[in-house]
Image 1 (cartoon, rainbow, N blue to C red):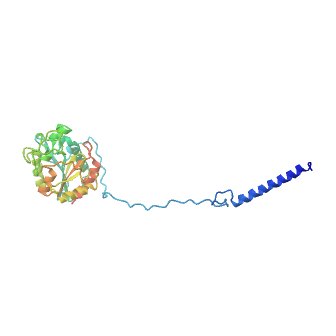
Image 2 (tube, rainbow, N blue to C red):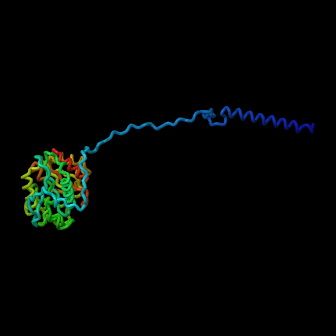
Image 3 (tube, one colour):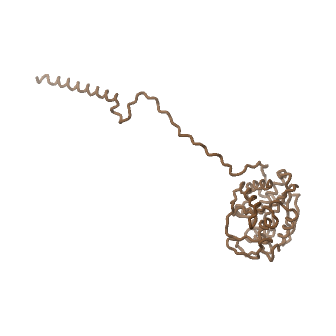
Length: 316
């Protein structure tokens, strides 16, 4: 008996191994070794790629009206176009006897007027912008509509412009702020809260006391413009002329704001603007008028003001 026992044990162990192997095959085929809910692979095709749900695009928003392109300007920084223009006229003289020059483009009955340099050297970039516009129009006079005459006065305060490019260039040679000297809500002095106060400056001995203001009043009354832009710097935005509000000035300001990046409504510093050109034009001459302040005291914002010029020329 003891001699046959090893053979019998081997047979028993072999049978057990075969049984375990068969059980493993059975359990594998039945999915026993996969987590609950996950069946064994059955030669399934690869999973389909599912794309994210498509989103309905937002409608295109047009923030500014499209404008017909004008000829590309070719203007260099050293250009002095006013010296070569043939459409120049002198409308008066400054305190120090410098000429006040106006440039005309077009011959139509709808008269538009642009005034720059009212604050001389302090806002010298407005004079430089006017020079760029003049240079462009000298090269491209065809952009003026047939029914329009455009006048540009590039420097109403040539004495301040000649004195210095900085705060001491703001007043004329009589130390008068020319944008405080107009005969509408005029004051010799005013509260300085929120106003320019870098140097002592006043509104003049009387309303329209300054020769520069007198000359422009006479020119406005002669030409009777249908709209007026007065350029300034810097940064406060677009101010419609008129106190109380003048609706046509507001409409002009809104149309200009639609093609520019200048703040509108303008930034309110709390200043009480007395003796102002655009308020005088709107409230005493019924001329839609706006003050436009350039972005800073250096740049002319030429491309932006070309868009404004196009709107201004077509404005009715």
